[in-house]
Image 1 (cartoon, rainbow, N blue to C red):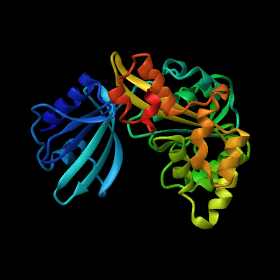
Image 2 (image 1 turned 120 degrees about the vertical axis):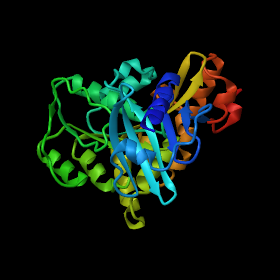
Image 3 (image 1 turned 90 degrees about the vertical axis):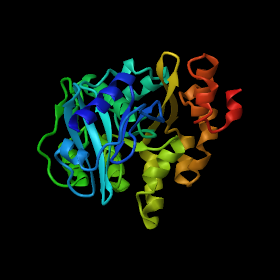
Length: 332
């Protein structure tokens, strides 16, 4: 059965899928450019096969780094139930790509000049946000000598450190590690995925002068801000809004769509201008799409406008774009 799972992993790599989804007792599937597609003629994986293959499934759910299988390392998120187990296998790149090689818009080069505050990379699952964020952190580290704290507990790929100095051997919780880093005069903190954490310590680190970079799962800039603020209790929400308004430098949202020559990235870019800060501080960040649409001269970009440009240029089809666009009328 291990051979059968390996054949599914090999199929995932061959078709360029971002994920392999295995549920014991059911047909397996892959995720291609955001679409979940059944694997032709794939038999159901027998109950117990995932546990035997992974050799480590502690608790009811968890995430492990496994492999190499089929020449690649894999990030595996698993769930166990009384009726069987399921797992999502995601291939991991051996090396972080260069930030400038990811097809990012020219206005995103402005991010490389930021030295303090909060930068957020967002997108749905398997949108490439972690790869882009890691490439951004790597570009910063290689741009000069920085003092860096790498606190991503589930790092999918190594950061290219260049001549930068990485703080080692910090202990405790993530907030405690950030506090230790700040006492060491840290310049850059890479947190990885923001989930199940308190936002206040992150904002305090950004207020103290560090550049904090993290990812969050959301489909647009408003959703990303909602995800960050929802981590705080109602009594702390006003304080979190005020702090976030003060330190937010950028939110980058990424999606991947199928194109004629492979996967095509689409972007939404929000910069923390005074107008944006005012809306966040007042709790009216739901109005930000209109500000983004009117602020192209400041480097901002609305996802709908990016999709419209990709369709007009023939990079993606209108049928694929309409699945993720907020206002179909923008596609023309």
